[in-house]
Amino acid sequence: MAKKQVFGFELLLDCYGCTPRVCNDINHCYSFLDKLVKFIGMDKQEEPTVFRTDRKRFPGKDGLSGWVPLAQSSIVIHTLSKHDYISIDVYSCGKFSKAKVVQFVKKHFRPKRVETQYIERGKHYH
Image (cartoon, rainbow, N blue to C red; front, side):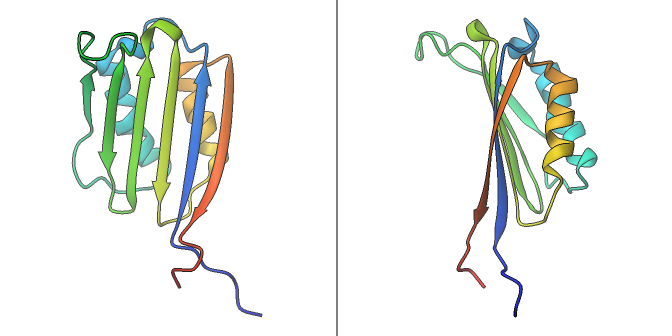
């Protein structure tokens, strides 16, 4: 029987109660994106980009958004500073360790709670 192949794998993380102030720290979020790539064995196409959400245009959404493009796809982060909440999306056409990503996130942001969803993408691609 042939092994089922999919196009990619996506790990979604919702991090609640993160260490205060990390959700608003551009350098910390940049470092997270930059170091996670190597930690899970991926390849950057460009350096990470992190920017601050415009408080006037998006009231109540104060925080940061960032991403790093990978040869294998991308890693995206969004934060909501007021709520010490971070959402992270790791998407890759190459396999990666879900446990390693969760471990890295916990070490970097120290959330009180992490919810994960794992999705196989492109189930009918091959």
